[in-house]
Image (cartoon, rainbow, N blue to C red; front, side, top):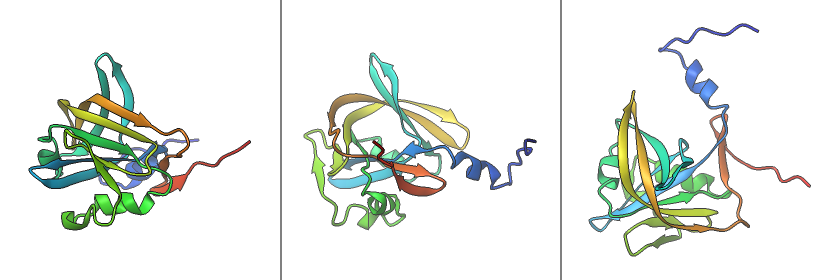
Length: 167
């Protein structure tokens, strides 16, 4: 087998990265009375246990993150297997309809959560690090909820997929 040389103007890297399965999260909060949110498949847990830190990366061109990071608390919903359309809706460019007709819950700190998610993490901004055309964001976990009966949504091959349950 021969490796293909990486070319920065090629779609090959994006396609190759898409073969790595990942969970999908919605990061959302109320900021100045307005619901803000974005979707990420670059989410990682267990970055640190003390303090409890999670990580995701956001494009430097994001117009949502500069507002969202001002929130007192940011909700992370690990989206459930039925949330494919929800992920598309929250990720849409039209910010006015991102949360339309979704079942949501807001914490006292303003973190916003999507119902039907197997995991909710309430977080606060901790640190940011430049990483090429993205920024790595560390968030400190301040509250959590998990429902083991719900399955997560998976992003693989540039498509949303569900886990296959086997005996």
